[in-house]
Length: 227
Ligand SMILES: [Zn+2]
Image 1 (cartoon, helix red, strand yellow):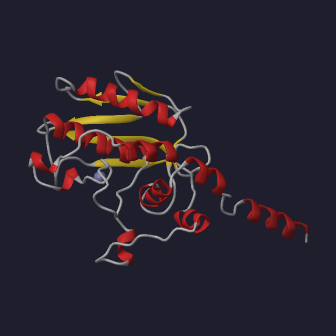
Image 2 (cartoon, protein in one colour; image 1 turned 135 degrees about the horizontal axis):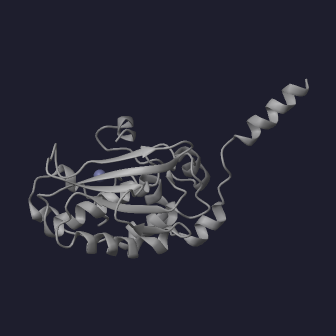
Image 3 (tube, rainbow, N blue to C red; image 1 turned 180 degrees about the vertical axis):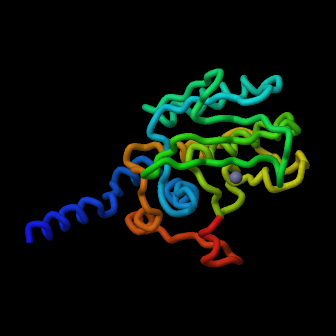
């Protein structure tokens, strides 16, 4: 019997995390709360993020401007993920930007490898050397948003970089309308790294607590949750 109660306590303590609905409604707009329901849940299911400081290193031969680009991303993102710090180092970063020659299908592949319990331990971004100018900037920024834990949204036309699937379109520069983080991109980073958004938070619990409906892809229905 004693073990039964122990098990009961254990199960209760493992149940879903209480979300502070009032806090979220006070600090984020309805539009932001809705958009987070689309982009805040890595692989569509739960919140995954960094819990430790991020060190970025470039692997390969950086093009002119690559280091400046990385430094400008760091400067922009660091205040949004505090108290986590982001630094660039010469080698052995836990977030490696690989400057690659080969392009498989599209512009860039990002591989975010997961540690235990919804925490990122390290991450790779592949940045093909044939990408230049604003396309290079947009691609790296888009991949960087994935590396932080954001996911593609279903809603279109928001002007965010997480929405722009630059890696899946052709090399036409016209497809890159926006190569900087939009305000909404930055708010999503801020929200993902808000202490009230706890790693492992389930999308369905988030939507239910805030009374939001899950957006489904208009043509693919339920399958759209797999992206
Ligand atoms: Zn993407």
